[in-house]
Length: 632
Ligand code: COA
Ligand code: AMP
Image (cartoon, rainbow, N blue to C red; front, side, top):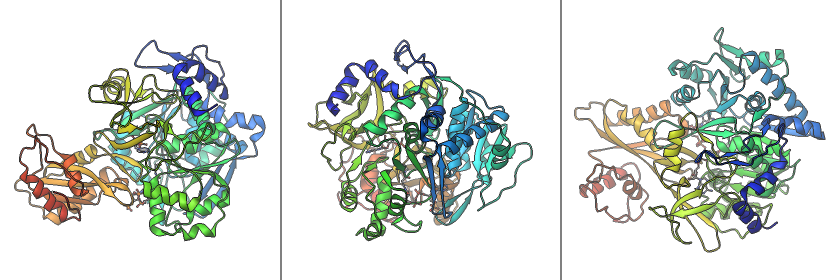
């Protein structure tokens, strides 16, 4: 069926469409109702169906003859390891680890925090939770103890699963001290921790609380899949909002499994048995959906890559992996390709490898800048598809759905709305805008299966953050337009969120950290353009009168503070001290204008500015850290 027919069908008759799509999933108790709209705006898919996500991702493939196929390939250039885990082995390991969790009193509905590097055990822990109906919350390894503590306090896990270390190119990053510090800082204390002792770093265990992964797995009994309601939460994944308090996005079991399964053929155009590689991290939504769940639910082989696009050992790393494992689809963030292009601009290393297995490259996480996309196309000679999605949606809001029909690729556009998403561009009053006009990107409710149910134990905040701006719509907080062909252009982000190397971070959260320094009176953090990472944060800081710390020392302290409180992943390296910040007469800091100054973009002096002279002072200050305005 063509894209347009499919899209229209999902729009006109969503229940019929998604009931049919749901047949790709094994239901323990088939649903009789497709969509529950009795408690809007809280829509629920397949409300009376029961299933188990782990069964669909693992066990059923073993029962259907895929037992000997690799489910996971662990490729770790940083430890010189390549390991194949078949579906049969995965089933056994997951069932045992689920047994270990059960022994630690984890059962349906309990939370388990997973703070792990890119090792197969991270996926095993996630699937083991799904197996027993526990709710996992994976926290990205690059986050500092305070961020981990915030998530522990919110999710209140019974158990935390972690490892002794991660490896960043050639540096061993000890995780255990970070975990211990986070638990110490957190008000909520987990009953137990399970720690994977890696050979690169052994860690001491706390008696009575910590358990060795190998030991608990070896001694556990296998446990079977627990049937859960389709609406039962599968996981919580925290994402940056406008404040330092991250939002706990809750995903269900049923809608998620259905959507994941459908996207593999219809968006990515893969078949069961194909090798699918999302070069991301299990700590991000891309890792949840396309390292763990979707490829496995669909019966593909999924690659768990513990390495970088460059430096492990060089800019040929991705091509080596594609050749060695016959990868059919690669999915990564544009920043990875900018890094490769920077190190190997002529793509010389590609010629050393046979990458003929590669059918398509998918990019997401940030806007694909046209030069990078063109470079990737020229080097790889396969379609390069930009698709747009968010932690909240779990899968692409817009994409070139290759399994349905391929549309001509327009550099800079994220292609057409995916079936199920009634995407509208709204003006400030909530009226839909005609094509070509830029506005707020919103999805008319109900969202398709797989999107967030709510924020963890914060229904009101969920409505406030996403649904209250314009009644009947989910607000993506992105701005863009749809052109006359129906192609979607995502141009910028509304609100205080920036995108650093494909990672979504809160500038508001960073401002809270800077403001906690005793010498800081007020501050602003803005995301400025960066050739490699897309955006990076910089700070503008006003000191308290009488602040005594020497300026250079203070800047170093501020950089360290962000690293300590948020994590290295923030890539916060520069700050500048200014006498005052530009504000509107009502006191709102003009972050957007400062960003334009730093990015050398044209800006007009806001009519509401309190004192325009400050903008000259800001320009001069930004020059001292390497930014300047060429337009006045
Ligand atoms: N554990 C601990 N520290 C981590 C970490 C982890 N899991 N991941 C990153 N960090 C650290 C890095 O070592 C780095 O520290 P440094 O400032 O001391 O050098 C810092 O966090 C920033 O990391 P990163 O954003 O990865 O930047 P980088 O300069 O090391 O690498 C790229 C740049 C482009 C190669 C890298 O961002 C990348 O591979 N991106 C791929 C895209 C991707 O995964 N996107 C996810 C969404 S799809
Ligand atoms: P995250 O939830 O961390 O995945 O970040 C989601 C945000 O990243 C989106 O709301 C967009 O702002 C941005 N984003 C993701 N993919 C794209 C894309 N293909 N084009 C433009 N922006 C994107």
